[in-house]
Amino acid sequence: MAKIIIGNWKMHGSQALAETLVPRVASFAAEIKSKGEIVLCPPATLVPLVAKLTQGSFLATGAQDCSAETEGAYTGEVSAVMLAQAGCRYVIVGHSERRARHKELNEIVKAKAEAAIAAGLIPVICVGEQLAQRESGLAVRYVTQQVRECAPSKGQFLLAYEPVWAIGSGKVPENADIEQMHQQIAALVPGISVLYGGSVKAANAADILSVPGVSGVLVGGASVNVDEFCGIIAASGE
Ligand code: PGA
Image 1 (cartoon, rainbow, N blue to C red):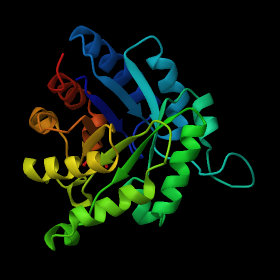
Image 2: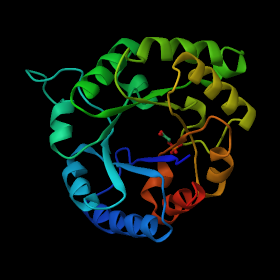
Image 3: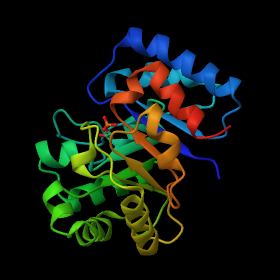
């Protein structure tokens, strides 16, 4: 089945990066006849530019967060409707960096996912355990609770399993652990596509994507490097 490759630029990038990376990734995907769904999630200010650059290509645009509110006195926030109008098809919600730095709890993550669905976007809901939970054997129980409390009851969405200790660390769980968690999430939300995220690179993408139950990858650091990101697209099959 076609894989989903999502690049989360985090707070990296510039107009110049978008103008060089997007056309190169688009032509690479066309060249290898990639059947994957490839999504670029730049910082909010670059969303309109990336959406324009991806028009007519295999690529889609996403954002990294949205407000749970539709409109109003919420200084600094951007609504899902605004992101849809700016050209987004997807939005990441509940990324561990937002959970940690902005104290986003499951309740708010679910509200954001519901706001995204209402605006016609596909939310990519991130879940994942901390190292201490993995080491004490509580990873599956913790992620189960996150999924139960974050998943909307209706509408289309994706889940991304991102162990917090694997993000930006170069560490990746054993394939068996990835498989176990993906199976558990699929059992909780039948029919869902579950992506893996955390230190995905061109060198390990094929291995991770071959794990049963892995529908795609959510890529951070490697997504702002054209060669790395194209290598991951190549690993996702033609
Ligand atoms: P990483 O980040 O690929 O740099 O580990 C993944 C993520 O945070 O989504």
